Length: 376
Image (tube, rainbow, N blue to C red; front, side, top):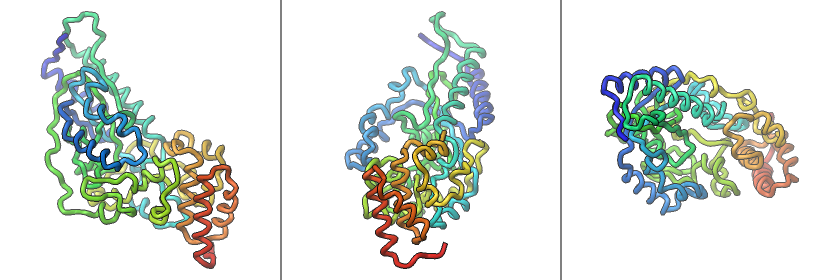
């Protein structure tokens, strides 16, 4: 079956898509190909062979699919990479939260509504619109029964090499911290993709890096998780430790976590390119009141029902109440001792979870060894 859209129609279709995407809240849209990703696959295989993925079993399990867009969506000839900023507060607000040891720091992407839901719905609408517009503008096929062009959307929900695809489409370059960087948007943006068999005009790839001699993300990573430029040891990364790791956080790393209870943004906050990061336009990512300024002691006091209620629709729900308490206990153990924190920790010593009890007892031992209480 052959499919053909004349070049002017394809150009018009792309322009329509770009305008629609901007109205949907996407700040950047680029079109790339599904060409060879073997170089990125070799890098991934080496990373996995070194065990740097930790307990993320899904990484090796689906590694063979990551360099094969055609296997994820047969017939794919174009991959649209889209970026949506999630900052709703200036980075200075994040630094302020990090400086308050009694306030739990949450990665900026997780303060609002779950981005999977927000992006997926908007990507689906864009993909549907793309197919309808392609049909409306006119196309030819040898199969009169064909329903039209096809498209499939992804957003951190399948084995997709998002950063590599972003580079291939010119959306940005891989920073030394391994995240995608954009000259005008920094790195505080979500990525989403649309795989399609519609042969839209291609944007030039990103062929140059713009990190220069800067090493701030390496030298200022709290746990030394960035081993070298473009080499991340997930087992030491605070985002991995507080989100992906299901068991106990290694004791040697607990003091380095500070007050970070869900994810970490340090490598982004110190990146000079994020001086240009723009505040996003999507209200769904605004911090919810339950997380904005609530003390660690109050967060540890949440029971499972309160956790579910206060964080309904939040990406934080994925770690569950048990790991939520684990993370907060570590943060309290790193904060100056206060009567309130000692009280709520003591109340959790009888928690049914051995994981929670272990981290609570660790925190209590640290606080009790620190000496006199500080005034609240």
